[in-house]
Image (tube, rainbow, N blue to C red):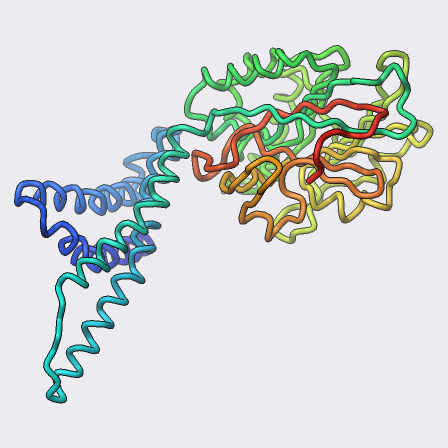
Length: 417
């Protein structure tokens, strides 16, 4: 409760500091409009305080709040993020007026210009409104705007019968974040319309709890392919980010999650492989548990164990949730793994992508490979941007992805990231 009180005080301090430039900016408006705007301004901190107290006192539990909780909390976060953006402009104006006041103490005639304060206040509010508008649009328009990304993967000595083999990859479903079901059903239809030979899921089925997948079991179990549907675990699937009442409860949740993959009809690979017979040829599909080079994410993956017993198969595909694994243990070290499939980054759900010209996201300063196709010395990595979302219930610039990869013995016509 003390933390809630401290947070509420901090938010109120921000609100009081922003309120003066807010009044300055709306000063030219009529009195009824100014009054309405002020009521709306103060309704937000009141709602935020009520929400914090309600959650702390369990008037509203996370279960009762449901998925609305994610949207509402994100909206409040966006409001205060934008207010923080306004703060430097307010500070500049206060410093300017402070300098004028000090100069007046030494006999200089103050030259306070209210128009300048109004300009800085309006500029600050506009600076805060721009990211707010973008992020709000991302919440309203983009969480379910699925995009199909296509790429050709050239493979040395690819058997003729495997030319054009179609692999669909999906990743990072994060079913606990979904607020609607119908758009997700549309994503399943989009996958099936691609007529894949093989469907691969590269981790993060849920946010923390296996029960999050219950409303979506029937729709995702529709995913079928001639060569099968295979899956691996992501860092969120282990329940490490939830405060469990006991270790037994955490283990029970994990067992339920493993059972969920079976109910979906997906073959879950946990540091193991499957030798697939496709069009008369052998293909080794390898799946490892989560392995990351970043300290905050778990290292449950064991590539050596997963590879044991498939050395005789020349064509190998690896599923590994975290793309940093490719640099750490695959690239240049396991040359017979011609393709690695990862997810995890979501493209940070924020960035700019203009095909053939620009691809940028803040996540690139954390992950060298963060979205799309990468290659080095004949080895390829594809990083899926994720089907779902986490934390922020939207996307700006980086839309949810369904990936279609086609194997070819020819040179690729696609650009490589």
